[in-house]
Amino acid sequence: MAYNASEAVTSGEYNQLWHRCWSESRTLWDKGDVSPALRELIDEKGWELPRGRGIVPGCGRGYDAMFLARPGLVMVGADLSQIAVEAATKLRDEKGVPADLVEFKLLDFFAFDVPAGGYQVAYDYTFLCALHPTMRSAWGARYADIMSPGGHLIALMYPLVKAEADRDRGPPFLLSEDDYRQALGDSFELIHIDPSCKTHDSRVGEEVITVWRRK
Ligand SMILES: C[S@@+](CC[C@H](N)C(=O)[O-])C[C@H]1O[C@@H](n2cnc3c(N)ncnc32)[C@H](O)[C@@H]1O
Image (cartoon, rainbow, N blue to C red; front, side):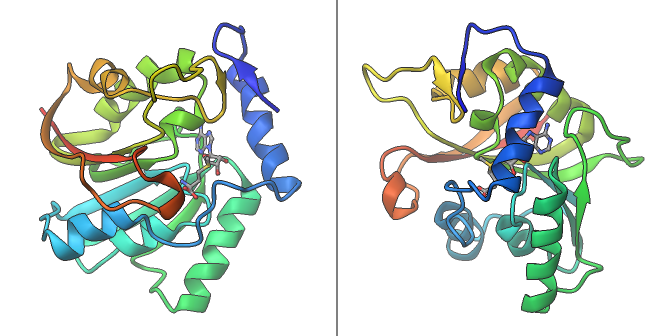
């Protein structure tokens, strides 16, 4: 099911799309592993993450949330779909990742109670493109609300638009670097960008990793 960017849609209607994808096992976005750019940033480039609490909205099967979880950084993977939450929890237990380091929760990113002190780390990948374009400014405002000053939002920008690309139908809705700047620019400072980051094989040229610091 696809939407037009110009189509009026309530979030309730739009969210049904994701429930349907999961219940019909249509999860073609799922690469079955941590995103190479994230692994490279942390393991090879040694990016220092703040300690505290982290969140991965729209976590799907949770590979990235599990990767980021470590002593000193307790992660939550959040998804709208109960099926996703159960699949991620099962995978975590199969992999032996400690449950006290990463928890998967049934949450709507836009409507849940933020713990006192907010989040110090967030990771966004295949999430902004999953949202209807009318939700982009709310997406940026929500990150500003939930993150503490100095917190790091790692946004793996994807799928970056190619010339002539049709930006109007999705999900995934194609994006540009400017879309991220517009949504985050007021409350976040861009502190890292790597256009040469590693990518999934089928996404070469479509991904650029960035880190934004909450002002
Ligand atoms: C394209 S999938 C990406 C999943 C995962 N990040 C990955 O790369 O495998 C988008 C995910 O976002 C979830 N989602 C969509 N809207 C959401 C919302 N408002 N709050 C939380 N999760 C949401 C969907 O259920 C789906 O699992």
